Amino acid sequence: MGEMGRRVFLSYVRQDAELANVIADRLGRAGFDAWSDRRVQVGELWEDAFEDAVRNADIYIILASPEALESNASFFEIGIALGRVAMEKHVRVVPVLVRGVKWMELPKVLRRYAGIDGSGMSPAELADEIGAALAAVAA
Image (cartoon, rainbow, N blue to C red; front, side, top):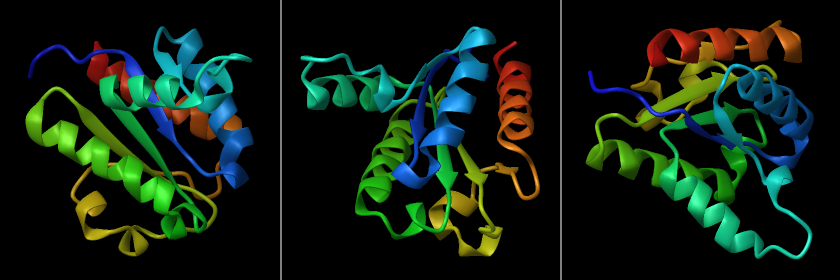
């Protein structure tokens, strides 16, 4: 496999913002460039920042919560991630089950990818698990 980049896009809904922030912080300390919308600066064009991040990520972490599985915005982001994987083999999609979601509840296209089951993990434990998994494949 070719070298995996370290630009990470976190796909999440508002209800999972705290968890996404913990994951972004942990990945940042591990040397990944983890983008979440909290990085958009005052006065910056939000759409431009979002489009650059979502179109240039090497790794897409999909926080699959009940609300995310009902969100059009989440499915838009998943679609971009899957399109990137189809065109660029180094790109990774990592579904992460949170807040009670089961593997069989994921859309079939996401169940094809090895992911992480965050059931019963604290935000810090899950962030560490994600960081360790990404570090292992990025090494």
